[in-house]
Image (cartoon, rainbow, N blue to C red; front, top):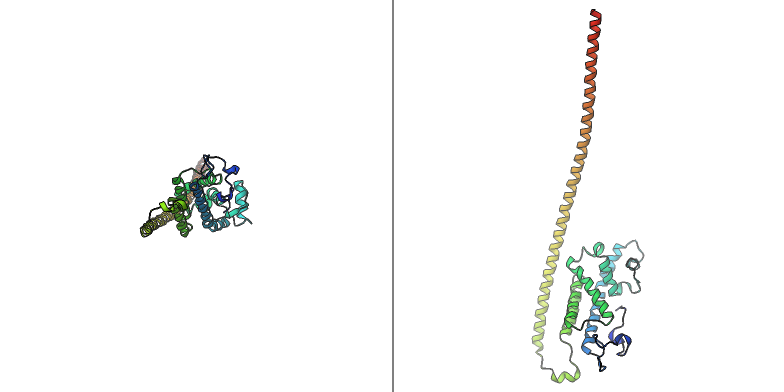
Length: 281
């Protein structure tokens, strides 16, 4: 996965990036690195990889259609955002920034508006991840995994199972070899049943989300239809108003012409009467 910082496996314990003892994934004063914090960092790295693979083709298609006159939509988008485009559509941070920057003209008609705030949350988490500064809180990682899952679900529903697997691994980390003897026997059948129930509940929620999204789309289309009819009526009223103004001007001109004719007729009669009086005298 493309990122601005190496993953924990590539960073030595005594490296400058990993030097502060009070940050997750960094060694404490005794020099031992907390495996749990490092595993959380790794889980989030896998989540960003899944995000990039799932969103890449979708974003590429949408942006290519939007910038169809450009040779490279990645370069054009990067220039508008004032960023380099070395990794382009394969970089999850670049993808997230593109989603946020071009939400209105490119993506708003596909995603629900409730998903828009999630992009900023994932960007913030990605920046914390890149600088090894994630909160020392498993609930935060779980919320971020769920947030990424919600964003990915409308685009690539099949990818959500992998993200749910990451959340399961977060809640049930693998024990260290020296602790295996202390681990009680696990009822695998019961866990499988619980997982099946959880997946069934999620599937129902996904179906409900799809139904609501479909209803929202129908409502949007109905609203657009009503707006179109209103616009048509307004245009018709404007045309009638223009014709009314033209007719009023025509009637005013006819009225003026009639008055001139009437005064001309009165003057002609008066002239005839004067002529008759002069002849009679």
